[in-house]
Amino acid sequence: MSFRASPRGAYRISFNEITEISTEKQFYPDIPESRGIDAAAEVRVSEGSYTSGIDANLVQGGSIEGLLLDSSGKPLSKTVVVATDPMGELVSRETTTSDEGKFWIGGLSSGRYFITARPNTASALHYPGVKNIKEAQSIHVLSGKSAGIGTLTYQQSVIPAAVTFTDEDGTKDDVFVVPSTAGVEYVVGGKVVAAGSYPGTGTVTVSARAKTDYVLSAGATASWSATFKATPFVVTPAAVVFTDKDGTKDDVYVVPSTAGVEYLVGGKVVAAGAYPGAGTVTVTARATTDYVLATGATASWSGTFKATPFVV
Image (cartoon, rainbow, N blue to C red):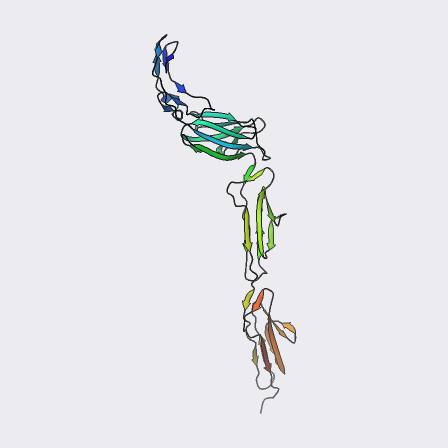
C-alpha cells in the first residue's frame, strides 16, 4: 500500500474504522487498537511523493452480541449500543439494534469492554443491566471469538429469596415459609400466594416469577419443592405409680407427665400429679395429636387400695 500526502510531514496510519467489518482496527505497523494511536509508528512523506510499503495484516477481531429489551420485556429496536475500553479513550465501537432488538459489534481486539445502550426515550443502560455506570461490568473479548452477553434489559433484575421448609416428626409443626422479595411473586398450585407461613402436607412445590418491569437474574433458583412426612412421634408412656400403705391416709396414685401422652381415669383426662387412692383405680394412656404409642408399650395400669386400718 502506498500513500501520497500533502503537505509533507509525519503521519500515523490506521486501518479499518468501520464497525460492520469483522477485522480488527489497527495502527501501522500491526499495532492493535487497544494500545492507542500514540503507539503507532510515524510515516514520513515528502510533498508530492509516494511512500510505499505501508501494509497491514488484518486479523479477525472479536465481537460482542446480545439482545436489548425495554422495561416491558419487548425488543428495543433502532437503539445505539456502544462498546468502549475501560478508560473510554482508546476503543469505541457502536451499532444500532435490529427490529428484533439484536445487536452485534465486531472488529474488536483482545481486551475488556463496557457495553452501553443509549435509547432516545430512556436513560443509558450499562451491562449487565444497570443505570449507574459505577455498577457496570466489563466483558472480556478475544480476537476471533464472539462474546455473547445474552439479554440486556431495562427490566430490573431480581433474585428470589428462597422458600424454606420445616418438616418435624408428626404434622403439627410442619410448615413452609414464603418470603417477600420486591419484584417477585410466589406461586403454589398455579395461584399467587402472599408472603407468610403455611401448613405443610404432602408434596409442596413453590415457584417464583418476576412481576412487571422485573426479570429474574440469570441462573437464579425459581422453584422449590419438598415432601412432608406424615409419620408421628413415637412415644412410650411413663408408668403410673400406686402407693398403698396400711390405713388410707397415705394411699395415692401418681400420674406422670409424658410429652405426647394424656392419661385418663374413668374416661376423663387427668393432669399429672398425685391423687388419693381408694378402691380399684385404673389409669389408661393414649397418644395426643401427632404422636403414636410405641408398639408393645404399656398403656393401662390398675391398682386396688386396701381399706384395712392400722393394727394396734
